Length: 482
Image 1 (tube, rainbow, N blue to C red):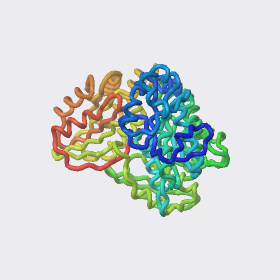
Image 2: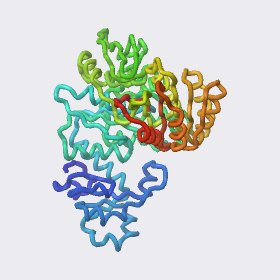
Image 3: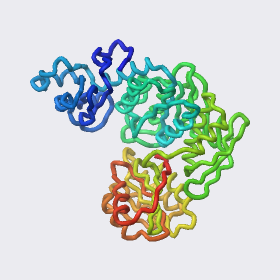
Image 4: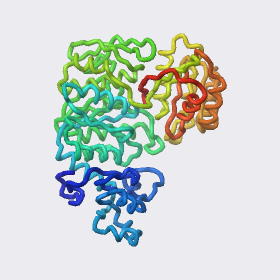
């Protein structure tokens, strides 16, 4: 591992280092284990109570670690346990900051193009689409895996460049959930050459308080871009478009609006995985047969196209690449059952906009279905107005054109009650196990079911129960808005 950063301990730059981990169970020979503790998490904007990993240092060395990074006061607290390893310990003020500083040094040595993407919804799908579009003509692209988009996942992703520096471009998703300038910290690690903002929606209000504060937090990606870089902004979202004056270089817009620099026209949706549109930029137009559903996914495709076009990719090549995309895992997976019903699994994340968007997507693709059913998990981190937001969402769902909604856990009861008031058949389930029991009892041939929820509600349990009870015919991926 090599990096040119004066504040990085020399042991971390040794050739025998093969990688960095924050989970002692993942340690392999040559790894450096970063032992995180509660003060590190708190000082870096992570909510909740976390395990003190210092106690796993002996296990990490037993598994082959060449060094362990620990917080200074944890050395004092665990001196007797750690003393046998004193010559292989790196003692720092803040373990997460040390991980980020190391990643920053690795990035500086690598020095190639960084595309950074943020937004309240669609980040992972847009990241995957962008990486796919840019991965042509032998170009290699580094991207976050899973949801590695925060102050831990981002540096761990960048550190891949230490052991494999051959990537030409990095496409990095940047997330945030608190007012602690999380995106600004990520931009410090790897300043974007291209900064993409997809949208600003009322999410994480529990910690941020207002949608205006969400916009300020998302705008950190534009403020953190390189001088002379490119800001790629959604022309259809006022709060996003308002970030244009913050750009330190060009602004390229995307969307359905006629004013967008890269836009879509003649949009058509016919069944799951059968979207199409004309991709237009600078007076040129190319038809795209797009294998993902919903306007939200076309918007993500336009963001990817705007990035690629701003970096000099030909429009026809971009259109060809969009036609061959594959979906990110667990984002709107379409499951067809031998018993004659179809289930869309979108159990990764949820907010009001994403829920309604995916409901519309289901309706668009469910022509001829006997019933359209939405299983909606409680939406988290919506702040003091959470009950009212659930109620308003339930009222909107009642108008959408579905046949039934099953609300799962907590404030989803407010959603169900509002849906019932709007004339919709609504059922409340205390948790995901209860929802699974209710759904398996009532589902029948010809039904199309959307299961939409956050990981905290565990709506994936409903899918697991369906697969246990019924025979799966086949599946294909369809990303959702979350």
